[in-house]
Length: 370
Image (cartoon, rainbow, N blue to C red; front, side):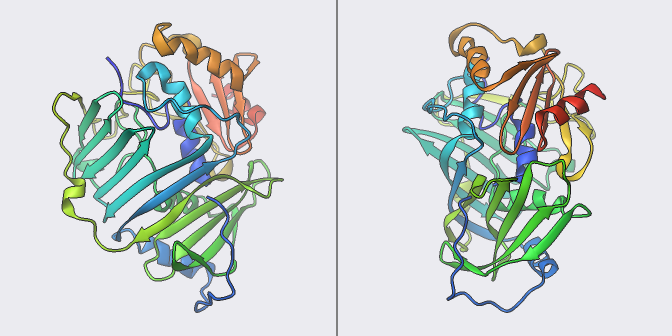
């Protein structure tokens, strides 16, 4: 059975989590923007109060992790192309339309090469849709998860993140290993905004700093900029190029699969259990977390039915996946490693995937200790 096209697959899902420690083109300060002074804590509090905000806008992501740019696949091409889908997201630039009405209604819409990919949440109902394959998945969130959009769906589809979600992940890493300072006020997407800079005090992390740009009126994060140590330009970035704080129309969140679509109904995880998808083993094994703060390393179990070493079907586009991995990874004892400016990935021969915002040796050491 084909899976819907993924923004980030099993090998890159934890990279997105760690790289929530990362992300948009740097903002130029403007002498014309002069807001009332706020301490870093006051800016964080302003941001924390924005969870019920309603808005829509265009979000641009740019990535410069030191990887070769992967040609666009023109939309998903089934599970066999999942590796190139993941690497494509981590290179180049991508644009999406984002619609939010509080914490329980969100839509992210990507249009590329005449294809459309959507993730839509309306209350406890979550849909994904890929027009290039005419595939949709539907999940009804259980009560214990109904308060927030999951980072991944049970079929392994990663839910695209907004600047607010990325900023929340960064704030979680603030204490006690981070120095927080304010910097110049700026104008972003026509909005006056505060900026705070998070600088890790952890010598092990690859993250140099992360800058949060927060709308002065609503507290909604407008941009998140993260640089790698020793680099001046952002390594990975997400931010609004335009934003509208009027409430989106309700029909934006009312999704129905088009006639003829291949619809997969996915089962929700049991309370306290893991999703039965990439990142979960045959027994629904939860991810392994080693360390804390900026140098956390996350290990994902081999997906059910996968062979050691991550072997996949050799039919169709799946046959290209190992060759593509060979181009961007290096063979080491026990598997292969992908080293980027901000995130290291260790693909172990037993099928497990380990990721952290630390160098590859540290990721392998964390894996060896488990």
